[in-house]
Length: 374
Image (cartoon, rainbow, N blue to C red):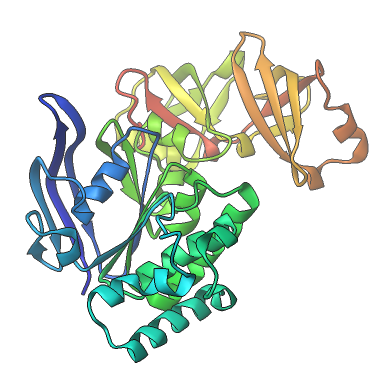
C-alpha cells in the first residue's frame, strides 16, 4: 500500500504569511494525482511538506497510515524528481542513478540490475557512461526520473519536471511519463502550473488558488462541471469565455439574453436550475471557445462580433473577436469544417456571427462565483 492522507495541513511562513490553508486530501494507493494552479498557489509547498523538505505548521501527513510529520525525508520511503534535474555533474549517468543505492550499501550486482532495468525502461541505456553535461534537457530529466525509480519508493513525487523543456520535448516526455506510470505502478503526486499536463496525466486533479483547494475531481469532472468561476477559466485552453447576462425564468422555462439575443436553456441544465431554485437575475455565463459555432445574420441567438486576431493553429482557427459592447471573446473553429472561401474570409475587421447551444452553457453567481448547477 502507498496511500497518502493530508488532514487540515497548513503552512505559515513567519508570523502571518499563509502559503497553504486547511488542506485535506486522501490519495489512494497507485493513484496518479496532479496539483495544479497558478504560481504562488501553494502546490509545490504542499508537495515539499509531503516529502519532508518543509516543516508542517499544523495538521498531519500520513503515508500508509503512519504520520510522517516528524520523519526525515530519507525515512519516508518517497522519491522526488525536481524541476532542475539536480544531477551530480562529476558522476556518470550510471552513478547518478545508483547514488542512493550506494548510500545504502546495496550489493553491486543489485545496483547494476536496478540501474540497467530503469535505463532500459527510460530509453537511456546508451547514455549510462556519459556525464550530464553531454546530455540534452530531456535526457537529463530521464536520468533524474531513473534515479528516483531505482529506489523502489512507495510514493513518487514530481515537482514541475517538464517546465524547463521546450514544447516538443514536453509533449514527448508527457507521453513517456504516462507509459512510465503503467510500468512502475506506484502512487504519483505531480505538481504543475500547466493545465494541459494536469488533464492528460492525472487520475484526479487538485486545483489550487491562494493556498486553498478549489476543486478535486477527474479531468472530465473539472472540465464539464467546474465548481466555481476560477476553475472554469483555469481549466481549458484557450480559457472559457465568461460574460455577464440576464437569466430569465418565465412560464416555467429559463432563458439567457447575451448581447440582446434570447436563448432557451433546455434539457438537464434547465432541470438542475429549477431543482436548485435559481431565480431570474444577472449571472455570469460561461461558454468555452470550442463550443461557439458560426451563424448567419438574423439567425436566432446569433451574436455579431468583429475579428481582431486570426490565429491559424493548423487543425483549427482561434478567432479573437470583439462584441459590439466591447467584450472580447475567443472562438475555436476546426478548419476541417470550413471550405476555402469561408476560411479565407475570416480576416481582421470582418464581422461574423456566432452562437452556442444550451447544453454547453455554464452558469455562475455574480457575487460568490459559484456554479449555479452544483
